[in-house]
Image 1 (cartoon, helix red, strand yellow):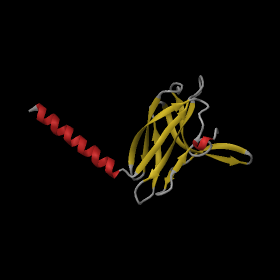
Image 2 (cartoon, one colour):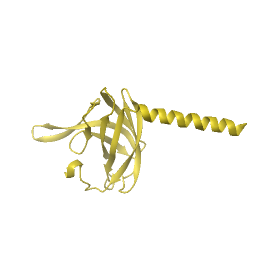
Image 3 (cartoon, helix red, strand yellow):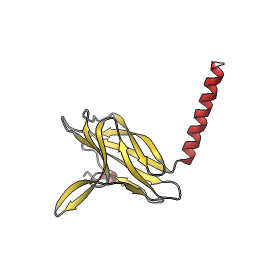
Image 4 (cartoon, one colour):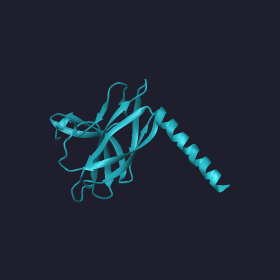
Length: 153
């Protein structure tokens, strides 16, 4: 009897996972972060988002157990000084990948609990206005890891 219940639950979970994968409207590619030095209290995560359905969506928040606080950020120029500023959401339009990369949009990890070490990974939950939460594993690369397209911002 218990075996039948277990098998039924397993089949239901597999069916749900398959249906969820088929209806996923956001694709997340290449989530990564740079390693941090010593007692650094902040880090950043980068990735590429693509809306795979016909409608746009918005990344409205992110969270991770490696940081006390996580914010969506953008770099802006104020005079001749680059500054990071929080943003309320990041637009993800169909047919046009949205890049989160050094020197641009990114996920700011504030008050990290331990240094981010190259060769490890950590989870980040991305929450979208329509698609809901998506959990990704962020790979930690070397401190001098190049940004997208080979730039080293």
